[in-house]
Amino acid sequence: MPENRKGQLLDVRQKILAANQAAAEQLRADWGESGTLTLNLIASPGAGKTTLLEASLARLRPLGYQAAVLVGDIATERDAERIRALGIRAHQILTGGSCHLDARLVQQALAKVAWLHPDILFIENVGNLICPTSYDLGEDFKVALLSVTEGDDKPFKYPAIFARAAVTLITKCDLLPHVDFDVETVLQRISTLNSSGRVLTCSARTGEGLQDWTQFLEQRLASKRKGSNSVEQGA
Amino acid sequence: MHEIGIASSIHEAARQAVRAHGPGRLEWVRMAVGELWAVEPDLLRFAWQAVVAGGPDETARLDVEWRPARQCCAQCGRTAERSPGCWLRLCGQCGAALEIEGGDALDLRQVSFLTEENSDA
Image (cartoon, rainbow over all chains, first blue to last red; front, side, top):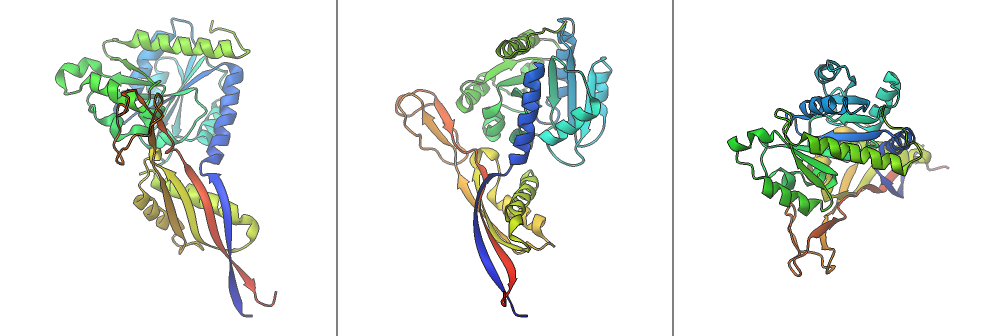
């Protein structure tokens, strides 16, 4: 049986992350219905994501908001334990080597925990400024954290995240006197990449700037609920 | 470092695209990759080789069409001249702020697939 090969040329035009996008849209629709404001926190390892969350949660609770946290890490439950120690619902997603969360991992995690809808859901992504940027998790917006110890050149080195984040938090600003980090330069670089992006400067340690941050969250939650049918406010 | 994950998603998508065409192997796959994805084409091709190694598509080639982001002026409409990886602050013509357009593709464009068939068919 002689064999030959027949070549076929197929025009595909398919988004590589179409499956992730479909899962993300489903999550977005669910959170639209429940009126849950969802944030995707993206930063380098050690930028202070979990510490910022601890400080934010401590401020949101007295204001009456129910919050919950999904934390992505390659290994260890440490971050979720830190959040649970505050009495806040938290679930660790272990990615087992993958350097980012994707929408399907978030769906699986939410199916497992079966939480009642929180007012605000924080998703702390795996510490990494590159890969998590590419995967939509159905969030309302991305938050980039840039700690002052990382250097003011980072926005231009990792343009994708700073171009896509609705808000960039410059963290650990209490260390500014000790490092060569020019806040004005960072503001200019971020506005170049993202003319509508907000930039807030804060320190979870001293509390500086955290009021602006929680007010920003409250405004975004209120405008999300005004835009949708579900108007119930966190008790 | 995310090239491996993207390469395996490309392989998955290409395989899905040819599923209806029966057994065979991929000859080449063409991707459009935008600058904002922070993907290095060389690293992506290297990752692709690792992903397809040992399988039916081992010899398949990955072609990458690079799609740079443009910086355009919202005021005068001019597209700024920029070198890769370099971001400009203001429009050189009118001094207004520039906006980023494009550079966000990560699309499978074309697949060449070789089917095996008997000549007496």
